[in-house]
Amino acid sequence: MLLPKGFKGDDCSQRDGEFLQNIRFISAPVDRTIKRGQGYVEECEVEVPYGVQVEYNWSLKGTLIEPYSKKAGFGTHPGGVLQIDDFSDALVGQYSCFATTSGGTAEHTFEYRIAEDCNVRIFPGPQSESKKINEMALLICRVDHRAKEVRWKKDGVYIDYDKDDRIKVFLHFTFLIKLVRISIRGQT
Image (cartoon, rainbow, N blue to C red; front, top):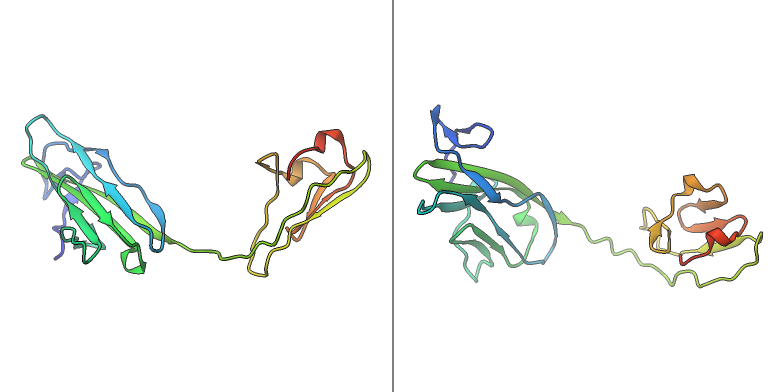
């Protein structure tokens, strides 16, 4: 079942040229990346005057999402809640939350994407190494061929190689400190 089209305006509260009551989202989902197999619960909520009834509907790629069923592991709950038990490729795409009152309908759209697993093997990293001042230190991080980038940290902060010409990285895997100084001391 496709949802009705024709919502207009910055807040999507106008339909077919007729001005409708302003409906504002106070809780709205954002674009997100989710891992395969991960469960997720999302909420959509609008601000309305006391006593005004709100009906929420959700869509995925323009198709209305059915109420939640444990068998499907996916669906909506009353009050603007979307539940996903097992995120998969079939659930990737553009979602919309529709909030309808007697004064009109508002739509909020967002997107879910799959977080790809990298499965890159990292071998034991470099060990602590003591060097005298003005000596050179060479630290090697071994990873398998699928690694696209290896970044180094010092004391929990990523190292900016452009700021210190004594520090060099070769092929992102080998870390070279040309001349050890007290200011370079720390945990990598």
